[in-house]
Figure (cartoon, rainbow, N blue to C red):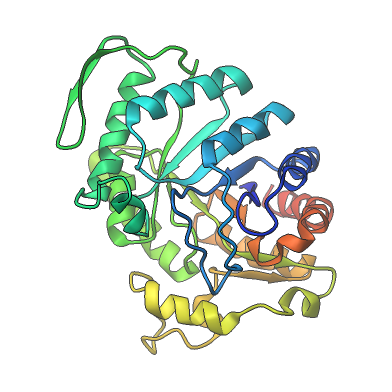
Length: 328
C-alpha cells in the first residue's frame, strides 16, 4: 500500500510555509504522494472545515510543490472538468517537463452546480465531460495533429508540446456505483474519497466482476479519509464534529452501503470515512483499508490543519514504518 497526504491549500491555514515546507517534510518521511482538491468557486464543507473561502488553485499548487520536492507523486483528487481539455493538456505537459513525470490525474464530476453556472456550462452532463476529458487528454498527451468532436468540444489538428515522457494515470473519483463502473470501464484508478469500508468493499467486488468481463486490469483503489492523529487518543478526538459527519453521511452519502438499520447513527456506522486516534489506533484503522483492497491511502488532515507539521511527524515516525512492516 502507498500513502499520501492531502495538502492544506484551502481554508484559513493555506499559506506558502504550510504547503512548501510541509511537502518537503512529507517527502523526507517517505510519503508516496501529495494531493490537492479542485474548485472554481469554493464552498467549504461546514461539518469538516471552517467557512474560510481561501482556495489555492490545484495545478498551480502542484507545480510549486513539484519545484521543492524530488520524486514524490503529485495528484488531483479530484480535478473538475471546468477547464478546456486542450488547456489542461498543455498544463499537464508543462508541469511534467518542469518537475518530472509525477502526476496522477484524478477526475470527478464535481459536487457544486454553481461552479459550472458561472462559466455557462450548467447544462452540461458533467459525468460525460469527465469521459470526454479522458479521451481528449489521452490523445493530446501522446499524439500529434489530434482532431476531436463530441457534444462538448470540437477542434482539428491540434498538437500539444511539451508532453510527458510517460503515460499520465487517469483516475475516476466518486463513491457512487456508477463511478466505480466507469472506473472499471476506462480509468486507471478509482478514488471514492470519503466513504465507508463497507462501501469500498462492495464497489471493489463490483469492479472485479466488470474488469473480468471486459479484460481490463483492476484499477488502482485509493481513498482520502479525513484523519485526526495525536499522541493521545482523546486529543485526536477532541473537537471532532462526529454528529456533523453523521449528518453529512445521511444527507449526501445516499450512495454509500448502509448499515442494517438503514441509517448512519454511530461512528461505527461510518467506519472508514474517518481515521482518528493515537498512532497505534491509526495503524489499526488503516490496516482495515488494506483488507478491502485499497492500494493507496491519502490521509486528509483538514480536521486538524493547525497541527499539520506535528501530524506529518507522527505519521512519518510512528505510523508509516509500522504499516510498511506489517504489510510487507
